[in-house]
Image (cartoon, rainbow, N blue to C red):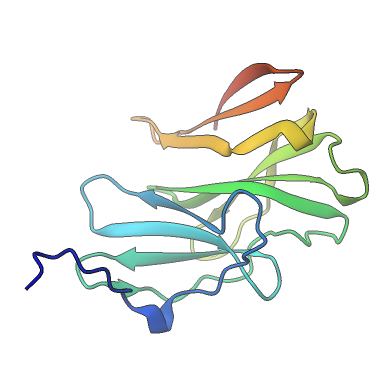
Length: 169
């Protein structure tokens, strides 16, 4: 009756609880072109781990949560400083940044972990990113190219100067 302008939460009972204190937002999503599925990665409210879930826009329902990914308590000495997700023909790919909790603003690393029915081992993409307090993982961009490779572009800022980095895996 209102032309579709009323906002209602879809499948609110099955929506995941996210960590409101997560850096750079509480969830990231990847809308696969031409499909009805949105792939989401979120920082779990109970243990700080990264978890996955999808949302089907044709049925307005969430899938079962995929728990147990890497997170802010990787070894109790590292902090999660941002993350993004893409979905490839090989499954989920989550790119995330971590830094040393004891020395905030010191070199960080960028890592990727895959999920294809079970969590793979995290793989380091680049280490020694400085300064991490200026690492803008919120501007971390991921895309899947025609060869099914994941492209990563992110930005750091030091003394007002910006550097863009581009990696492919």
